[in-house]
Length: 181
Image (tube, rainbow, N blue to C red; front, side, top):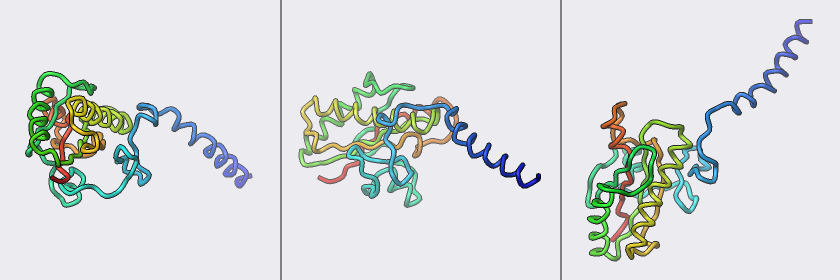
């Protein structure tokens, strides 16, 4: 009797475990998310996982360095749960646009970042939308799309890890990495 009870329990658990996953909070649809085959969730716009460019937030993290704030190109700030470009973001983009025009051979990667609120999937998708909105704006202003690539890190590589509004605001950004000149 004991063996059949264990078998029945095992069968019930086998059926219930997949259903438990169906009850989790869902982020955006998979086509909105940027997720990698290596399980990191970090993929560029071409769908390629793997090598991160020198100076990128991921490369810095792999070297034990914190993400960079500032640099030759300014970070683009975003409001909570938004990928709209407004106010301070447009002012920072104007400065970056000047630099990109003055350095016509430069290629850059635009990283999309989020604060720690929301699911991992949601934040990866939001980071992708932030990076894409910056790229689209620069292309509209005359920068060649071939000079710009995007990647989303979601909430994975924060510049600040405190659970405060000022820290969350620093993490909601698009960050530029100069790939070459």
